[in-house]
Image 1 (cartoon, rainbow, N blue to C red):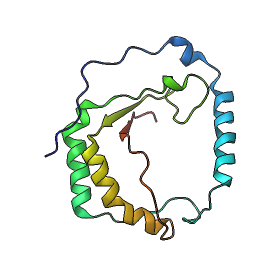
Image 2: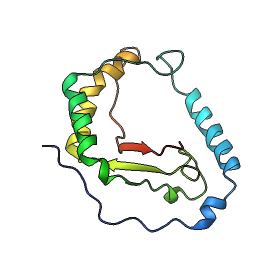
Image 3: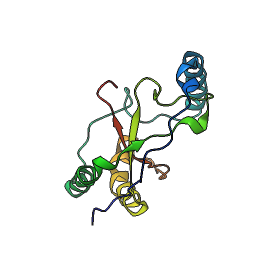
Length: 141
């Protein structure tokens, strides 16, 4: 029931020049683009942009079990396909890893979490978009 996606081996190392790149300028550009994009969105959620809310016990149990059973399968999250044009996660200072999930679990968790997120957003109609997996941050992040 809680089978996961297992990657075999590690991805090739990233080129060293990506770590030496001037990421400050990239982060500033990304922030400017995201601020521009955010101005087009009607904000209906909390003033600080987050809130704690209970989720169904069944969903929490499934998420926790999936993490526990698959935490060993976390793989380096590849951001190098964006090149040096965008920066959404500070992977060059503290590498993130991702525990991939089967599509059926992503769909189930979208469906089960949607009512809580919709209520937080002001009871608006939401559309499921991206659910990549469980991101794992290193101790230094």
